[in-house]
Length: 186
Image (cartoon, rainbow, N blue to C red):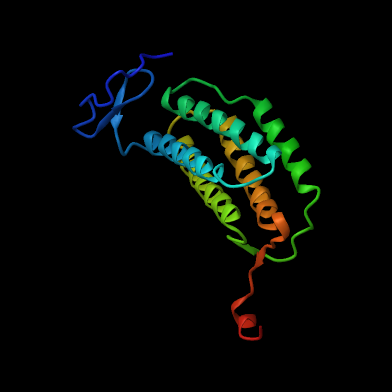
């Protein structure tokens, strides 16, 4: 573990650069920095989601996910290091299968919403997809852990399932998308 910050400001980034975990310095708009910054944003959005009422099983999964996202951010901050392992994907897939079992099959697209917690979960899902897109771009120019890219893909799927569950919780329902030419007929 690196040095603990006893002073919050260091002034080392005042000229638009930041330090990576390996000691190198890069511009703050570097694609690697943008990617781990978006992973951090996702972690924060999940933190906001966790302030919502939800089933304990969802809460436990999301809390574990926050720890894994912190690992992923660290992995991205330290080029060449691997912290996300295949077992993380296996666990997400098992949870996807378990939580999706009780949901009815989708016949229509759903709109983000249905409840405040579901909307927060959809926000987390879209930030996760952005982090995934950034990681794809980063992989074109630098070596990354391919497992981490798959992890974000599965996590966005899990967040979609959780949004569906949260929209239906306590007697709520999902908001189905109605195609433009059909909206006038409702």
